[in-house]
Image (cartoon, rainbow over all chains, first blue to last red; front, side, top):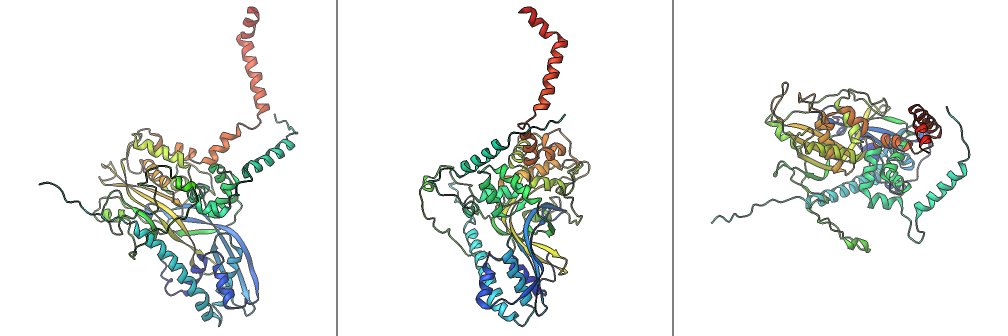
Length: 151
Length: 362
C-alpha cells in the first residue's frame, strides 16, 4: 500500500504530519512563528467520517473495519495559494491551522513553516513514538533455558 | 388498529430530569470529566468505539458518561451519531504489518523476529483486588529499554514460506458495506468480517467458546496477537494523491488452525482473522475463531450444524444494537395489541367451554 510518491511528494508528507498532530500543537507553533495571514474559505471546516478499510488475513480481500471522524476544510490566501486539510477527529480549529500551513508551504514562507512548525512537530511526535516503543521493548521476553538437572 | 394516546409528556419529562440527577449521583463527589473517562477507562472507550463502529475516543467517552456506564447504551449513542456524519470516503486498506506494536505475542513460535512483546497486559496479574488503587497515589513511569527498529513481520509469513499455511491472496474487490445496504445472505468473507468486528463482544465470545468446546471445533492456536497504532491513508480527490489522515490503534489476531484437508484443499494450516478498533484482545481472538468457523464452506469442510457455522444465525444476532432495539421495544406500550390478545383468549375459552365448566362448578 506504500505509495511510491511518498518520498518525492513533500506535500503528502507535511499534510500527513499535520493530520496526526496532537490537538492544538500546530496552532501553538504557528502562532509562535508568525502572524496569521488573511484568507478566504473555499470550504469551511466540516466534520464527517471516513470508512477505514483493512484486509482479511492482513493481505487478502479488503473489508470495512469501521469509520473514524475526520475534519476537512480548504482555504485560499489573498496571494492565491490554496491550502487543504483532512485531519483526524472533530477539530475545526486544527483543520484551519493545517490548511493555513499547507497554503503557506506553497509561498515564500515555506522555510519558516518548515523550521518553526513542521520540524519541531515531527521531532515531538518522533520522541513520543520512541518513548512508547521503548516501553514496549522493556516488556519483551528474554527467554533463557534452565540448566537441566539430569545428573 | 392504532389509537393515539396522550398524557405521558409530564411523566416523561420528569423521568428524564430524574435520570440526569441520578446520572450525576451524589454532588459531594467530584464530577467525572470526559478526559478522565478517555484516559482512565480506556478499555471501555475502546469497546464503545469498536461496537459503535466509529473511532473517536472523546465521543466514546462522552457516550459512556451520558449512558451512566451502560456500554450498550453508549454504543447506541455512537451509532446514532455516526448516521449524522457525511462520509468523505473510504481509506486505503490499513497495513497492519507496519504497526507500531505496543504488544505482539505468538502462542505458536517462541523465538520469532521482533520477539514476544507483552505490552500493557492483564496477563500474569494475579487478579487480586489492588487496594492501593483505592487510595490516591502516584504511578511510577514504566521502565524503558532501547527499541529495535525495523518492521515486525507477521507470523503467518514464516509458515507461508514452507507452504504449510493457506495464503490470504491479494485482492482489490471493493467490499460490500452493511452500513449502506441491508445485510443479506449469502454474506462473503469481507461482509462477515465487517459484521463481526462491530459485533457484541459477549455474543462473539460465547460463540468462539462454543467452537472450542466442540460445536464446530477447528482447533485454533493464536498464531499472533498484536496491538498498536497504524496510519490511515485516504485518497484525496481534490489533491490527486493519498495522504495520511490520522492514526488508529487496532488489535489484530491471526489464528492458525489445524486442517486435515478436504475435497478441495490440501492438508495445511488454515487461518481465522480478527481485527478490532482499540485495545480489544478478547474480542479480536473471539472474532478470529468465529471467522474461521464460518469459513467451513469455502474450505470444503462438513457442516456439523454448529451454531458458529451458521452465518445467518451468527450475523443476524451479533449486533447488540439491533438485538437490544427489538428486545427492549416489548416493554413499550402495546395496549392495543394486548387488548386483541385478551379478546382472542376470551373467545377461545368460550369455544372450549371453560367458563361454563367453572360456572357450573360455582
